[in-house]
Image (cartoon, rainbow, N blue to C red):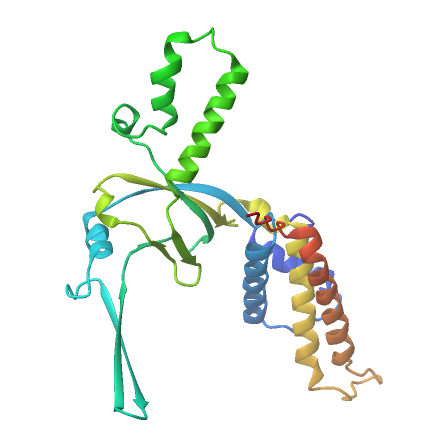
Length: 282
């Protein structure tokens, strides 16, 4: 099928592109599966169609608050690191470091996290958060609905957002996708049980849910080149071996051709397929 809709159809498509069933592609099933996984990882991490922006709502638990508030003397929720060294004057020196477990466990499909939104609950609308959109709307504009100048309203709200940005900093976060942990460097004492955090994140596209993943042009081309390179690598050891009829294996040429294709794909990656990085101003 020229438009694969599953993992197995993608594998058969790539093998046909390499000459099957006319030619025997000397690549094991296990090798094909590993190469598809490698191609998916590159596609998810570097292709703009490999991820989708999601907003996760996380309910805070008391156990998470306790871990985030833990101190070095508490023992629970604290990781201790001890290092030893030698000082020329005093001899052995020992240093102890403590790391708080102030993190949330994140699903493995999350590739990256942009930020954690400052969430306004129902009470902050009318009591404490003067920079809330709802607060300002009900305070100033609800009585003039239909008569307000839109330009003046827009400028006033932009000014309020600027004050909010300067006076109420966004939550400081740290995230590494290999750890599946979102560290929140905030005062955990200000967080309440059963309240929600809104997490702005990038999620890897799942082919089991969205079958269009397997028909992506980049994924098909990249997977085919990976299998081709593996085919050549498997045949390199038979270089110079004569088959009946005078046919000779040429695994090195297959390998070199595939490697050139992969190099061309990687050179196009940053200019064609990747999301351009945002400029940092300030």
